[in-house]
Image (cartoon, rainbow over all chains, first blue to last red; front, side, top):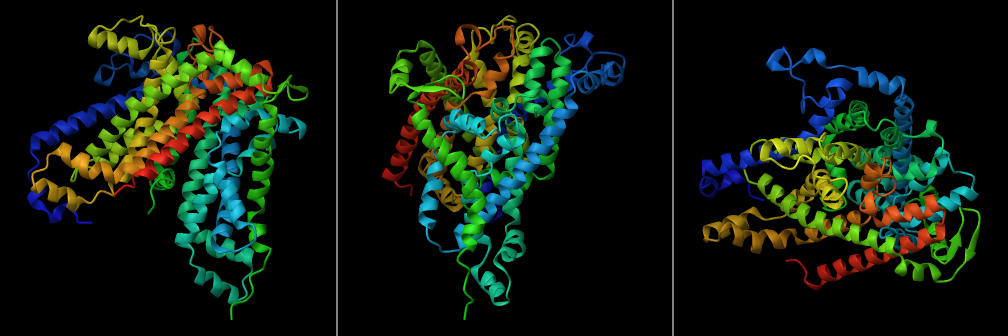
Length: 294
Length: 296
């Protein structure tokens, strides 16, 4: 638990040269990681004719020897006018928000019940859901498709959303979070004051669980945003496709057009990137919550 | 003293989760056992064939191609990615390192780019002549500008793409694990004259073992289920299908082909159970290893 400053003797033996070498290495690795994204962004703003003239920005007379004036929004215009990506963007926003919020509510309510109540069947439920953690999702593709066919839910958002509303790991994340963040004494006090059970969950437990709620909404939103196999199997009408599926289709019809495809990719990634930058802390806490306690 | 807690409350709170769980997890799981013994023609017509599907699978050369590709990808991505992720975490964990938060953000960011979108970027990056990789490597080290990543070297291409996507993600786990290493212990060892390698071997490694083995398992499980990345790169091109000579075909892609292109949900379920069997064996092996030698 000691902080580095408590031990100047050891810390100061680190030579400056090693520190510079480390930064040089880390910086070049960071550059390599960023290159594909930089390429995507620059390609998205280049018109069809000059896509392969330079690797990144076009050469020209402008500032830093770059032809800024040759950059264009044409790809984005084509994307929304010809390729009609606007609908897919709205579909993705809708599916991801609804999917994330509903899954979070199901898991929070269930996890809270497992953590703070004793009831018949609790062990059975815990073991069954725990067992579900080891099932690989592809195994359920065929039987779920068959089930949705018989329920008449193929090509509907209900058929796409419903099967994903009970992620097993979510239940355990919220059970753990409740044990740590929602004291039994507080719930007892609320009951003595005559607070109803569902009200206690909504007005006492949920606010205390806020960090986990935030993290879980974020990771499920991201999972929905990037989900491909689900909508690819369940949906058939192109107007219902979310971005991931719409863009894969786009690749088929605009195979040669790098600019259009990169513009589409940028439009798909940007919302998630911005969300992440704003809520970085919650995000990483959510992603590692399953692995490391505390 | 305490007012009676209503008996129905926990059931009410668990009801939404359990209903979905029963209908869309427990039932399909049970059904998949039966389905694996049937041959079906789309979702509405099927006939029982006993264990015939599994016998056919073992003799199906395409299945073995998919299995081999998946194995190559899994071994390649785990062996390259995880040591690199651990090294990055160790570098970022150095006391007093400036800009740690920025590095962490940069290395992690590809994880946010979904598999489909990474696939789109990769399919252009690795194109011969026009792709950035061959052009840049040609200019830097005279690399063959016509190097056929997408025709011949599909698995290395996918391993490199996964390396870009997941190294930073795994690094985050290792970084979190490194917080469990007692700094006073490392410092005492340094004073006693232990070198960096000895400190890593005897102090750091035992402390991060539980998380490390979890990360290995998670990577292997994820890699074995690889589908979206190759599918997006190859299914929508002139090659059609899974690239030349099925070089991009993975187990889950073969499941998808059989179930949703051929329409044989039974055969697809049999493939699903083969994948599940491999994962169960791996998970139990990992559990056994972790419990045999408790970390301390």
